[in-house]
Image (cartoon, rainbow, N blue to C red; front, top):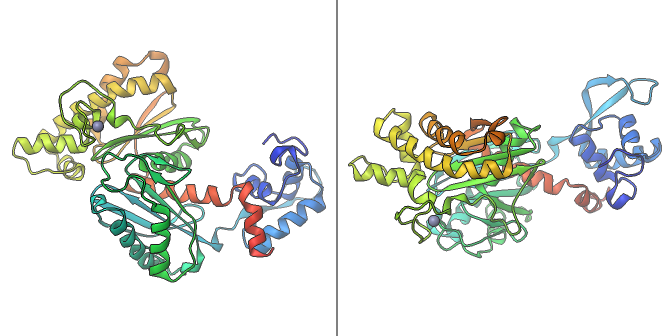
Length: 406
Ligand SMILES: [Zn+2]
């Protein structure tokens, strides 16, 4: 959007109700006067469009009281997105457990559940189970299934977001090409009796990056998150949008060859994930007699201060840091966030050791290397934001308002 009169709408046309909603939601224009100024529309036209948004229950007058009008004259009432009219359901699948939540439209978690759920049981069983979780969560949150406007799902594999299909996932047997959207939609309807709602699917690291960038690093125009759990994946947010590549493959750094002979779960040898993931650290611990089978076991050992786990986590951090030196040189991010089961002091120390040694000083001069702020909730928050941004995008608002009859 340019902010020039008459140029805010799509294709250079007049700004519609969806464009006004976007201006309010992003905080770029939150009074009638500011909306007039941003869109070049007359006061009457702005009023007509806002009325539709008020009737839909999507907009309300702010509690903050009047503020000075940019056009002069009497102070104006601020407008804000009314997040009470609907909720979003989200779930984040890890290899052996999952997390699900009911979220408000502004990303607040209203009810949450975590429990064992193995992706290797296959999509039909896993997504069917999630339908049951969703029904219970709505009850816990005291919200009706008819209030749900959409569902967002994070999965530990590459996703073509256009189709919602998982594409050749190394650690999700049976999910390749499976129609996740239809199955989850059916599970939601079966367990709640409500009409189907849109289902959006994306990679977990992408959604974690999106959730973290939007809630903690909104001004960061190039943001990278690396999730190191049972596998390794990265999410990249550029200019406030998830960067997915041409078919969802961007950020899948776990299967970059790092020149070892270790066998990876993807069937190849020498992948980064085969030597430096939570799964790989667990295997090496198990070889020395320490009971560990997954990234979450390593996480527990690290939390308990296990010295062997700490040493292996640091070594894994060095191997990941070596690959991240290339990532950072290519993308020049402002923030590199480490998340997942291994995200702790030992691993971070290892990442920093190799990253600063191998990357160009130019590309790390303004780089912050940090750990996750949202922790296990990052994927849920990112999935919720994905659904809201999809449903309230200017291009979709008009048809949704018409469907509501306003
Ligand atoms: Zn691999």
